[in-house]
Structures are given as structure tokens and as C-alpha cells.
Length: 581
Image 1 (spheres, rainbow, N blue to C red):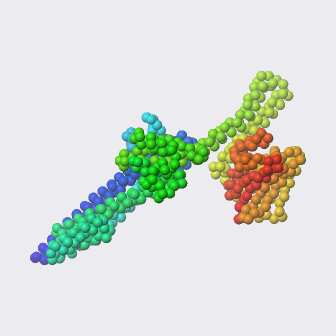
Image 2: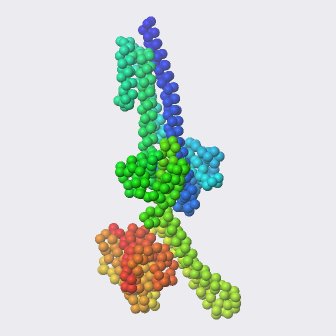
Image 3: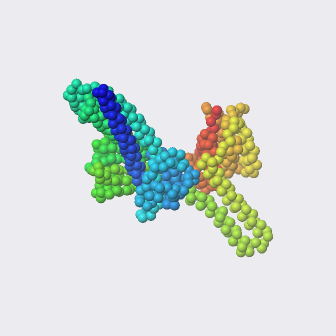
């Protein structure tokens, strides 16, 4: 009977342990999942807050440039980033095309962000097909809401981590139940040995040697409970330390991948941390500047003055600085870190954005200039016809012919602009086939021979007996040759010579068009392939100024290069290469 009672007690003890471990497992699993999600949400809130300050600087750009910027930013931060206008229309997304995405005005996080200033939710992504954690924050200019920035990360990793811990807990539970059954059979020889063992384990834990701790304590009753508590405590401490370490690694990865420079300074302006982007922008080495003053490291008093203003005002200060005689343009944001008694200095290299803005302004100015002349001519011609010239049939016919010429110029400009846009954007598909460059050369020469004869210019072709075949779009290469030869005819005086030829040079085929014309100044050689660029009035000609730009992009789409060589007054040679094989 005693034996039966013993086994009943063992069974009861095991059932109690199993129930306790089961409930604890559920609690730990839920707590761990909530903890992971809270950490993930905190990170996303920080990311969204930072991005809500950056987005207003770029939201006024054209949609394609803004979407490309968001995609690049999302890739660098390793998160999904979406910018939504106040009506719910997606303006840009780091993973999807905005045009393919549905209106987001009914999304919970979007509604809460507009209503409360912050919106969060976990739901399945309609475009990606898996569950994600979303955090949304409004982007404001004063009281006006410009947009809502939303960041997201998949929660699969959280569930996977919780699943791993669940399996570990289950295994621990099974081991605990088995150990409990065995320990219930044995009667402890004494209470001192398990107490000493637990004391030794506690000392190792206090020294931080948790990875080496194996809690195997003999005993039963209170000793077993104490051992079990130690085991759970160790596991939770280990998990907490691993979570902190993982968070630190993620933060380090973000800092390393950021394109903007980051300086962390103490109250005195001494550098305690900087990321690789800051090293690259200022050509610094972290180990040489950490522990030194900010002004000594960057050696620029304008940047340092922005930091000093933030230090004296206790508020975030922003400014822009030009370096290297205007070749580099930096945006500086200095922010006090109240909780850490220090300062964060963010350095953005805006040089490329400034260059692109200049290119845009130049393009608008050039296209306006190119359109002004034919439009002015058309206006003058039509006004003259309205004022009575239309009554004279011969005069009216002449005016109408001139109107046709001006309309043809406008049509040519629009066609070439469309062609250039398609090639630059990659929308123009090349029909690459193995072919003989001689065919394209002879076709171009045949097309322009009458024009050369009328101008009194000798146009010849010089080709070796055999040339290797290359992969090319024959129509596009012929277009390049026609542009180059037409250019040569325009700027070669009567009695001049033009030659079209080709030769192999290593692993490339070089095609050239040389003339004995007026030549190009050396300073202009690198710019002749820019849109609308004209060297001077002597070479302005009657074209649109787009032919060489179109030719450059066609050649580059073939994997080749194009260049010009000239001595002013001695003629010019335009060459382009095509890869062999």
C-alpha cells in the first residue's frame, strides 16, 4: 500500500509539474512574443520618426525620382517604406510600384496616424502575401499634413524565434517531468549537497557565466523547486541578454548601411561614435578621431558652428555647408540627446541632388530656348497672314511653306526628345542580333551621299577586307552613324572630306567618322554629348542639339562607349566602340 501511495504521489507530482510548466510555457511564449513585437514596434517608431523628418525634403520631387529615392532608402535601412498622401493614395513604396498598389485610406495604421499622430497594426500585406508589423506617422509642414510615412517589417522572424523558444521550453518541460519522476524516487542523502551546488551555481551566474551553467541539482521538494526556479531564471536572463545583443547588432547594421554620416558627441563635443558614411564623407578613420573633439576631426568651422548653436539653444539646429569650392554640398542636422547627455550630428551629402537639380534647370532652360524660335516664327507668320497677306495667293503659299518648315522643326524636336527619353529610361528595346557593321556603315553613307554632294564635300568609306561580327541593333547603329555623318557635313566647309571607317582593337570594334571641318575646342570635347549643348554660334547649325545625346545612349545600351577627338580648326573624329563576342 505504501508502494502504491508512493507512485500515486509521484504521478501527482509529475502532473503538477507538467501543468505548471505548461502554463508557464504559455505565459513565456506570449510574453516573449509581446516583448519581441514591442521591441520591433519601438524600432519602427524610431525609424518612422526619423523618416518623417527626411521625407518633406524629397516629396516635392517628380514621382519617379521620389519613388526611386524611397526604394533606395528602404533598401539601405532593410525595411519596407511606404509614403501615402492624405487621401490614401500610395506615392512611393520601397518594394512595390505605387501604380500597382490599392488605396490605403481604410488601413488601420493610416487612419490612426492621421487621427492620433501614430498608427500601428499587424496584418497580412496584400501585395507581399505575408504578415507584417506596420507603423505609420504623419509628415507635417506646420499644421498641414503632407503625407503619411509608413514603415514595416515581417513578423515571421518573431514567430520563428518564439517557436524555437517554445520547442526549447517543451523539451525543458519533458526533461523536468522526467527528472521530477526520478527525483521523487530517490531520497536525498542530505540537504547540504544540493544547497552547496545551488550556491556554486548562483556564484557562476553572478559572475556572468550563464552559458557554462548546467543546473543539475540532486534533491526533491523545495530543493527541486529552487533548482527549477534557477533554471527558468537563467534561461530568461540568457534570453534577455541575447535580445539586447541582437538589438545592438541591428542598430550597428543600420548605422553601417546608412548613406548619411552620423557623429555621436558627448557634452563637450568629443566624438564617441561615428559610422562608415561619416568616415567616407570627411575621409576620417574612426580609431584616430574617437576621443578627439568634433571640430578637430572635421576641420570646418561652419559645420562646428551649427553644432555650437544646437549646444547653446538646446534645440535641433539645421544648416547647409559647401565644401571644396562648391563641389560638395552638405546638409547638417545637430540634435541634443537629453536622455544621454550628448549630441547627434547627422551629415547628408546632397552634392548629387544639387547637381541633378542644376541639370533639371538647364534642361528646362534649353528646351524653352529651342521652342522659342519656331513658336515665335509661327506666331509672326500667322499674324502676318491675318493682317492681309492671305489675300495674295503667292505670298500666302510662301508663308504656309515656312509654317510647314517650323512645324517640322517642332515635330523633329518632340520626336527626338521622345526617342531620347525612351532610350535613357530603358523603355526602348534593342533588337540585338549578330551582324556586320559594314552594312550599317554603307547604308548610312548611301543615305547622306546626296547631301554631301550638294555641300561639295567628299564622303568616303574605308573598311578592311574582313571585320568580325558583333551583336547590334542595325537600325539603331545606323541612326548613330547618320547622326555623326550629318553633324560632320554641317560643320565641314565646301571642298572638305569625311571618312567613315571601322577597325578591331583588342576585344572591341571601333567605328569612326572623321572630317576636315572647323573642329571643336578642347574644353568642349567632354560636353558635346550633352542634350542641347552647342559649342558656339559657328557650330550651332540648324539641328535640335539632341542627335549626339541620342547617339551616346544608343551606344551605351550596346555596352560600348562614344567619344570625340579634335584640334580646333583641324577637323574632328567621332568614334564609338562595340564589344566583340
